[in-house]
Length: 99
Image 1 (cartoon, helix red, strand yellow):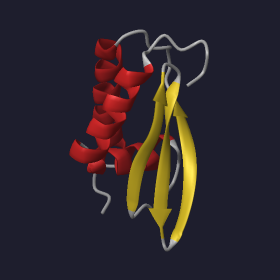
Image 2 (image 1 turned 45 degrees about the horizontal axis):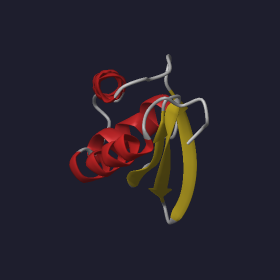
Image 3 (image 1 turned 120 degrees about the vertical axis):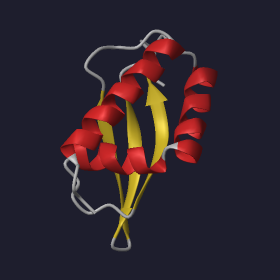
């Protein structure tokens, strides 16, 4: 985690685990909507910090990692939750109708 992060590492790790377990479809949409990755079989959040998060994306037998930065730095778990929910809603709109 970057030194300037004010989001505690234990909280970030818990959020990553939650996102992977409970929101795999949103992770795929994040990749498509914000990392401009068109072909995504699966996406797995590997890291979260106050500035953004990393996704490991699998598609067509290949794996790549992308980073998606937040518009503003996060300070709390509540801000992380709110930001990830907002991104999910925006990603759903951007990818509506995609398979």
